[in-house]
Length: 106
Image 1 (tube, rainbow, N blue to C red):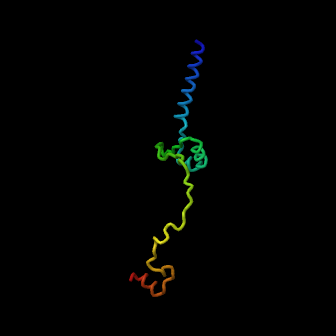
Image 2 (cartoon, rainbow, N blue to C red):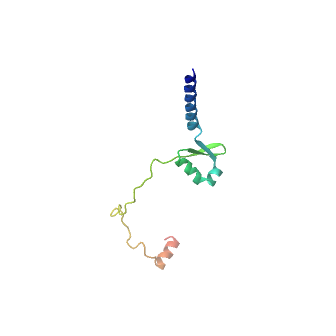
Image 3 (cartoon, rainbow, N blue to C red):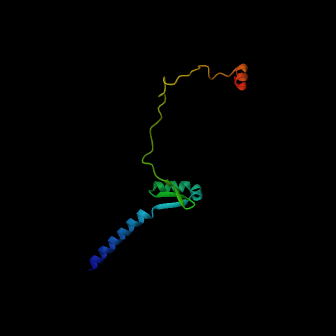
């Protein structure tokens, strides 16, 4: 009888831990709190906690951890030959006549 009681007590503790981890791991903070403690909230999310930001008692944002950071480096020159300049002298300053025409709306 004693072994059964110890077994049930052990099972109850495991069940209680499972409930605690599933329901109490959600951190609820206000917008003002989130503004003041963003690094702490990010660390909590990294540690596996879910963080919900509330505005006037209504949940508005969940902070979640991304699956994996994008580690791909940018590839330069991928648009080479695809972009063409209509006016090759577009970078040169406008002449006074062109400025006047532009400002007059001609």
